[in-house]
Length: 300
Ligand SMILES: NC(=O)c1ccc[n+]([C@@H]2O[C@H](COP(=O)([O-])OP(=O)(O)OC[C@H]3O[C@@H](n4cnc5c(N)ncnc54)[C@H](OP(=O)(O)O)[C@@H]3O)[C@@H](O)[C@H]2O)c1
Image 1 (cartoon, rainbow, N blue to C red):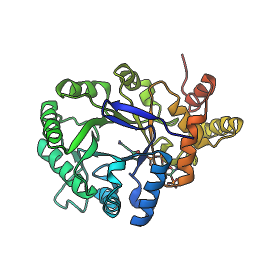
Image 2: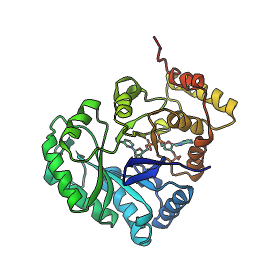
Image 3: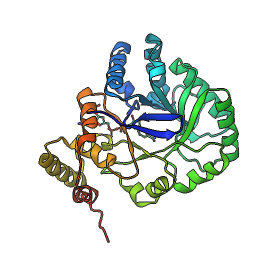
């Protein structure tokens, strides 16, 4: 049971499973417990953590920063991804009237500086623009990326939730290729298999990261008829293969030719191990399509 590495850029290789910290505040872990979880992930081969400035009402980065402060040797063993660009309505920003997106140079630089402070580090391995914005100046972003890169504050850049067109627009202006597009992908989130996003990433050999790979837990606790149908299909195939439906759903993503990198959202070590087990599973193409069509997708 081992996790292969995947190359996102010549100087940026990561394990093919990333640990996501969106729900970190809800985990209610002490710094010592979070340190133990991170060390366990590292021992299992997971070397990359996914954050965003806004996670946990702007608090998750600092929670993880306490771990990096506690164990000074840890930072060099890990790759940190964080995101920026969304301005949330929050008690932390009492003057803000609404949620909006800000990709101005000033906001990006301030956001990265704050992330560095929160993490107790002096560099971010990969900065993602969290969501595309209707108010977007790729030239400004390119200049800002250069400034951040030259200062050594950010090593690599990528995007999240971008359409192929939005991705290409930005790619045209920046000096270095974007290393990923982090998108929602799971047996309950098929839209990017259908809207050209996956094809675009394959075409440019950009490896996608899959957020909410277990559909936020809805694979296990179906909330409507379609989800129940999917759960039944997953359960049937998983039983035939003598694996759990989590392992099956990870294998379904991993086996796709786009070289998808799931961003795991569980804090449970056994469930993280179940994800790693997926590298040993081989689905038949028929099984892959049974899952793809389980929620009603019709093939012409
Ligand atoms: N770029 C974006 O816009 C974006 C958006 C959303 C998320 N993300 C990233 O993607 C990461 C993962 O998203 P996610 O947290 O929604 O992932 P997820 O794995 O789809 O969902 C995690 C939830 O499912 C539960 N779960 C996971 N495995 C389970 C299992 N085997 N059995 C039962 N329950 C299970 C977890 O509970 P337990 O913890 O109790 O196992 C947790 O509540 C986030 O942490 C974040 O880094 C990015």
